Image (tube, rainbow over all chains, first blue to last red; front, side, top):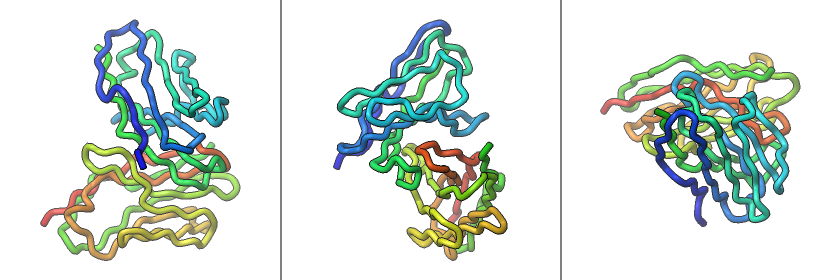
Length: 114
Length: 111
């Protein structure tokens, strides 16, 4: 069974640009969530989607957005990039939506903003 | 709001030593509690979980007991191996797929 796949794995952008990251969940998983990992702030929740609907959102500015498609694949977008957006962005999928199920994480997309 | 506090690292032990990584939480009600592990160059993996008070999660020789009275979920292993070197994260959820993580504890096991 294929795991969670994130693309691209690494990318470099400059301030002011925008970026789109993609996540393919495990087959059959309908919940997809995104996390930002930085050395200073640790792991922080960005948002969670279930059946194409955003159900939860973390405390991030509106420059961070996401969506989920009918096949459960998800994308997140960061517009007007800032240096502080440099981070590892992790996607996770789950078959249970009640918060007790295991989250399966991808290896992440490492974004560097110059 | 909900929060998780882990013992600060890094932690360095010799092989076969006893491991404890402390984790305490703040939450209203009854959260579910998790330990995730991140091996070098890999994504996060669930190590163990407990969804109600007094539950004990266990996996790969690691154990943690959900203690409501002390709001704790300490991770323990009786005899660590070099392959246990990783970063360990304590986390909680409360009725939603939204994990609140601790800061992580980097563990290094020397042969």
